[in-house]
Length: 560
Image 1: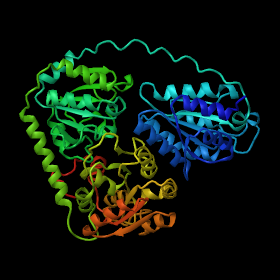
Image 2: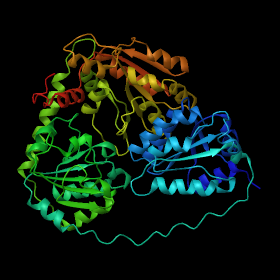
Image 3: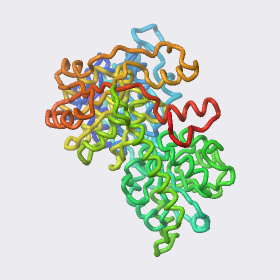
Image 4: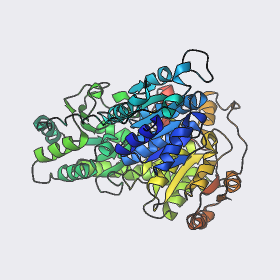
């Protein structure tokens, strides 16, 4: 008769889960042993939040639920940041925590805490099975809930005695009926608005990725000649070098949209919340008279922050296919508006290039311009937060669907390294580059060890300005240049830290060192850290934040 650990592992395998992200603890020994016996891949990491971040990234990359497994008590509390990050990013993470024996609940047992109650505010569903026999059913329900509708995190607490106790195998319940296919989406009103608009814009978000709508999106814009801006997991679903792709929809990173969006008369928003990234649909970014069509799978999002002319509650792929059909068989003729949008994009790219001076320490814009020229094709990116990183996000193009991992709406800095671990595991034959700052790297620095132990040849690029650069800039602005508080760090040699863990690395200080360093990094076959000495310079992102605080727009000439 199987025990609870074996039932858990068999249920996971039946669901198609073959990888577990974990950090070992006494509550988990039985289930980890069972998983190893069944040949599951076990990715053991160094911090429980690193575990949940990596599992979240695995779920995003594969577009299906992923499994994290941490011990109870402090292991559970450590994991909550990654769980909340996944939830806000709409990522189907199944976060499982062990716990004290069920027989000791509420009796002041070691590490006894209400784990389900703690998790419930940041997940779609949380539960603790009452018996060993319930473990498979609970895991199946967790999978279904995480993957349904707008995806998101779920949580299970499983007491250690339930993993050890035996129970008969129970057959999986019949899958719920798939239901009837959705009826035809009537897109006549939306197409009429798009045809009559003089200056339409399409904004695409993560719903494109989750619904596997990359081809549908490309076909739609090529049929209608609409200018496309992408954001979140939609970055790279249509490559930035496509003639109709105009780059980031984020006004903090693409100042061209400040003008484009103010001049546009119609917005089609597909699979993207009209949230803080889009100025909550308000006057800071959009004219009051502009009309909106929104497509989202989650009904509460429709019209939340902006009145809509047309609201479509649907899967993004199905909606785009219906729109393409309703648009008719003939390609819509390009309009002068496209020329205007392209010209504004070129102007912004020229402003970014002009910022890249030749002085030392390196300006981040100069470094990323050099990196753009030196990187091989087909690179996949894991991005952190911070001023250095924001310069890179503004300058480097997105070319590959699923290859532009970001922090998500929680803005969990530091998670770029755990995310990169999952990205490299998912794509062992691709180049994975994690881009972070010296402040953010400190959160999960020991995951360098994870990358080395699992033989993951990640290139970790660290912009080192010896400080919390973004906060330093915000404080300096707010105090008119007074000394900053709690923003300064040591100019540490993070390349030597990587070497101490068994990887390789080097420090670079000049542009002529970039290409040779990249060649050495990609030839090394081990995790490699480029510690880049940079100048702290306010990024476009930070200028946008400052402008919002004082009620001003950034200067249209892009000067800072």
